[in-house]
Image 1 (cartoon, one colour):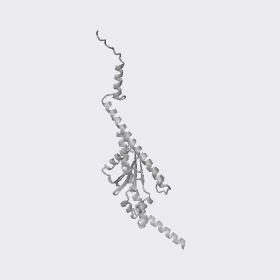
Image 2 (cartoon, helix red, strand yellow):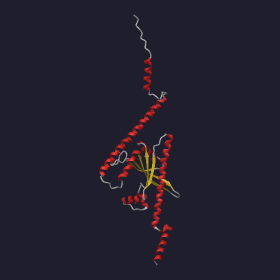
Image 3 (cartoon, rainbow, N blue to C red):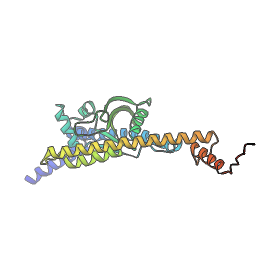
Image 4 (cartoon, one colour):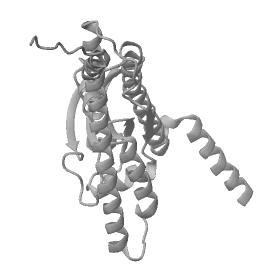
Length: 267
């Protein structure tokens, strides 16, 4: 008798899997899988825009404003916790309506100016809508965190419909990413002793890294100025190997080396 009941339950469970429209849980799981697919497609759309921009700069200006690009989709547990912390129902519809950072892209740039240039190029495109921007470079967090965060909305074309999907984009320099990665490993979601001491040391490191970023930016601008001066000299048909003052001194030196004959005054 018990065996018959067990077989009946198994059969009912199998039938519910084969007909998910009759099982609310399976319906929710199917909807969740579809939503994750849509976020994945949105990431690819935005990521492609950055890759095209980087390729364009590489060919036209012989440099890359983007070092590399990373992407991620929040895990189901993190999604549920964030919805609960906001007081929102943990449902598939609630994910689309209440969360903006399920899909995330991290863009790493060599210099600070590249961050703002890349962000401007992205949000100036016709199919991109800027939802929110947070500049943690001009206004760092108290712990020293620096980055530019923008939330954008982009239309994604599926088989039978089009949906506007939101993606969070974090843009930072190599140095900022280095600090943020180590800070995350040291204390994110961890109970560590001597929190104040660790926080103070991390803040000090963040300030040093910020100063390094600024110094590298100044060095880049100095390099550009030298290149422009070099081009001006070339356009004026002056030898590029030597600056003008050195050439002038060399010519004077050659003149002075010639023998000087003194004329005697007639008596």
